[in-house]
Image (tube, rainbow, N blue to C red):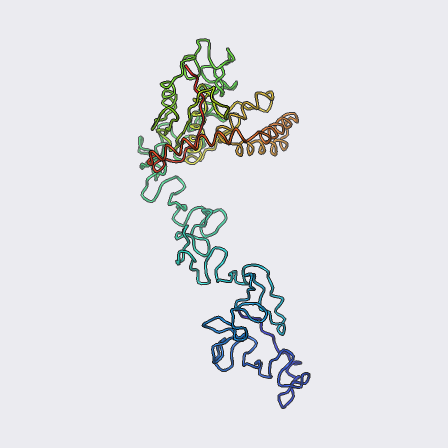
Amino acid sequence: MSLPDIPRNDAEKNNWNEDGTHRITGTKYDVLSFDEDGNDRRGFDKKRIHKTTQEKWDEDGYDYRLFHKHTGKNKFTGTEYDQFNIDQKGFDRQHLYVGISNKKLSTNSFTKNTFYDLNGLDYLGFDKNDFDKDGIHKDTEEKYDKNGYDVNGLDKRCFNRNGNYKNTHDLKYDDQGYDQHGVNRDGFDKNNIHLNTKTNFNSRGFDVDGNHKDTFTKFNSKGFDKDDIHKDTGTKYDKNGRDFYGFDADKRDENGRDFNGFDKLGHDKNGFDAMGNHSITGTLYDENDRDWKGNPKNSLNSKSLENIFTNNGYDILHEDSNCIFAKHLDFQNTVFCVKIFSNQFNTVSITESKLSLFLKHANTREEQHIAQIQSSSNFDNLREGSLTDFGWHAELTKNTREKALLEKIISDGVSETLETLNFLYNTWPSKNNFRKELINNVRADIDFVTSLSLSRESDSKNKIDYYRNNLFKKYPKFERDYKIPSLMLIIKINKK
């Protein structure tokens, strides 16, 4: 380890007599044990270079602290530590870096009391990411660790662990316009294949050059380009005030319905709200005793379950008396459900009549995710996993809100539910028109979710894991070929 040089000023030079003795010590060495030429008794100068060998080792291979260059052992103690219990690199026996204990040079000021020296290396010569001074990783013995990152935290394409190019804070794309995964801003790879569609066109029909597959121009049949700009208006809206998706500035279609198909009162075209309750009857069924999907009352059976999955775009890959494993036909997400009879035991579960709602919610979140990736238009009023998808509104009664929160927890878990509630609690007070009683309701809901007993949730998770593990053990291809289920539920089946 190199130590700072101690300059000799004029006053110091004048401290030597003509015969080479020091005026203060009366010997050939000054108070720091260096002679007039700047060498100590063993011939090392202040930079720890030997006067004869011009290296940091003397003729016998020992450095200025008597550590041997080959064995690493100290000549005085016969161990890897000197008389101060400090090794050759400045680490003590607990592998803490304390610097070089040499009282004559007052190097105690180098003490760090960490596991790394001044160069960021530990007692074995590796940094906190297990790279040595030459940038070679301890485990792989190459310039890249097992995750493909070098000593500077960059992969072979110069992207860091956050996906930023060359350790910048916001640049996600390299000089050729591709991100860490080799995909450009429009979702195309270097072979002009789109990430999601696996074809030469994105989901809206545009290729990598922005040409539409139907019109062979930069615009689709409605006059919008790949960035959702209309050719006539130069804005995101056509002459009728409709955007690429047919929505106006208030995010309503020509029938006054939002992205989920609900009108301003929160009802779909058949009069059902987001929770499946009918606007006239106030129940899960309309005047003709049919639910929001048109299924007759009390007709749910195994075939009905199959129909529910099919109607929501799912293909059932496996079904037995205990569980269902299904994959969406258009998306990558899968669903795993455990079937129990409603009188078996008390768990966090849903009824058959609510299954469609949860599948629809999962599909909506996937559609929103894809739309936000592929389109520059931003549906500001859409949030993945929003509480309102489950019928929660701050102005509703306590029981109604808590019922909605339980269903939100079944779908997205406790953590995400709390995160959403905390977001509302922290941001609403900054708005000019917020109502204090609504903030109080949000606070009460945070307390409710926080105070929930986790035993039921834990029991349900254990039951789901049990049947899912059994399924994957029996059919390994399900675990190998498909994504981890994005939705896992327990369905209570009514005994017929």
